Each structure stands twice: as C-alpha cells, then as structure tokens.
Image (cartoon, rainbow, N blue to C red):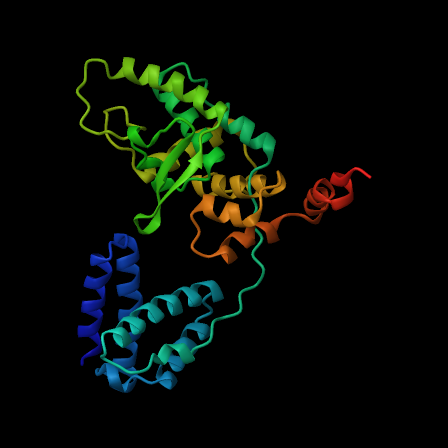
Length: 303
C-alpha cells in the first residue's frame, strides 16, 4: 500500500474520532513531511518498505537542524500514532517507529506571575461597565481554574453550575473545576451587567463570555484582554502575559497550597501526569521546603 494513501486514511480516522482540527492537521502535516523525505531520499513510496533505519536517518536530520528535543519528541509522537494505525489496519505487521528512541529533554523551568502581579492584573479593570466587568471576570476565571484559552472562550451559560464549571478540553474531553466564592461573586455582577448591556438584543450565541456585539470571543480577543491588563499592571518583561501563563500560575499556586500532583493533573486536564510534574520541578527549593514543613508527619501529629 502507498504510504500517502494510508496517511489520507489516517487523517479521516482522526477526524471520525473527533480529534480537534488542530491535532488532525498537526498529525497529517508532520507525517507528510517525513514521507516526503523518505520518498525523496530513498525512493520509498510503499508503506511496507519503510524500515527503522530509514526513520532514524530522518530523525538524525531533525537533530542536525538544531531542533529542540521537545519538538522532535512531538514529531515522534505524531508518527507513532500514524504507524500504530497502519498496524491496527493490517497494512504492516510491525511498527518501525518504535525502534526510534525518545529524545532526552532537559529540565523545564516554568516561570509565572507572582501573587502581587496577579492582584494587579485582576485589578487592572474596575468592573464599572459590561466590558470591564467581563475582562475582570475572565482574568479571575483563568487564574482560579487554570482553564485553557479555548476552554474559556467555549464556556456556555449552561456550563456554569452551583459549585463547578464544566470545561470542554482537548479531544472533546470534559472536566469540572471548582467555582469558588470569589469568582461566583464576580459572576453575579457580570451577569447583571450582561443582561442590561444586551437588553434590547436577541442573542444568538449561548456562550457565557460575549464580545461587544454578542458573539463568541476568539482566542485572539482573550489574548488581547491579557495584553490590556498587562499595560496597566506592569508585569515583569520576562513574563509573557497570556492565558497560558495564568494556567502556569494556577498549577504552581495549587501545589504551594498543598494540592497533590495527581488531583492537579485531573483539574488541568492532562493526559499524562509527567506533564503536570513539570510544574513541581519548576518550584523553588524554598517553596518545596515550606510545603514539606506544613505537611510533615510530626508537625501534624502535634507531639
């Protein structure tokens, strides 16, 4: 079977499994680049002729280009998914990419906001108008739930429950995050202003956060809200002011406050706990010591 015919099938299968368009596109393009290389370098078009040696040459080229280990591992992940599909469909008997080893990634240090910077960012909007209140609440939700940019944009009014918010994550996976009293208080004010702002309009979108014209917010609009807040809050220039950095803050703040890494992984919607562990690795030694002091056996035993 032609490798590129199998790749076309794989893309359709990913779509039928309801992977996000971004994931489907990434898997397809990543594998196509490899297949183009194998065809040009070795004249390989048939899927059955691709051997581990050929794939190792391709990955050696990626290393020689100076690409980061994390990027190369992303390529390897996408290719493993493709060749696994080929095996499951019976097109090949063995997965050749399994012979390619993962790249060793260095320790990733994740820098995020300080507590004071978070206070200034949320306080950057006074909440005296609909848009100002909306922006203030969006920041609060980002910092207090760790929701991704796209997850905040897609929150529907029906996703707001008494004590939780339902988030629609990657791969159409749903999860609940706590709705805390502080955020709930802001929501009451926001909903009152929202009803007044759109009083004469028939809203066609049921999203919780809406643009000035009553449409669903885009990810770019959410990024712009953080940029606006940063201009007023004067966050350190070494920190990228974005929803994703707010997610970093949420993770590290929860760990510092005593939440275990397994529970945090579920709240963040991570598929692999090793991803969550990066936040723990990035915490300063002093923070770990303070956390350990609070949780030490004899301190809590009160001997």
